[in-house]
Image (cartoon, rainbow, N blue to C red; front, side, top):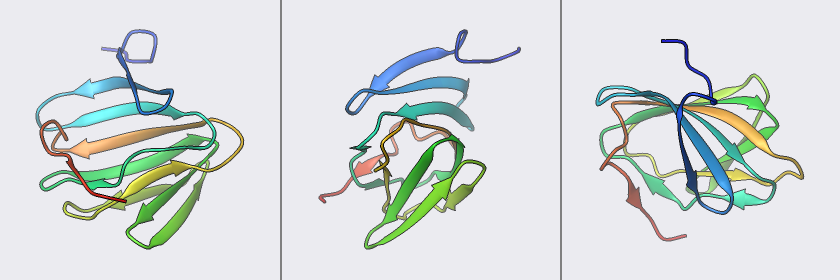
Length: 114
């Protein structure tokens, strides 16, 4: 099936953030997400899921404990299971990106203190 945000399951998260499930199975999740300026998710990790973040528009910061990586349009970042991370949009414009998880992160998110 042809997928895009107009026909995908939509959800809200965080502070004004949006997500669209482009693929949603037990073994694979592909989500297109949007984060408004100056927003961040809570630090967390996944016990079983590996993830790949790919920036479609804008920029993102991926913080791994005390090390931060800045991603621009066309750049991605792979995370192995068990790595604490936090996605941040510290810019003045919205960020649009893909989150690819294998297997799905359903029931596999462990939040950490900041």
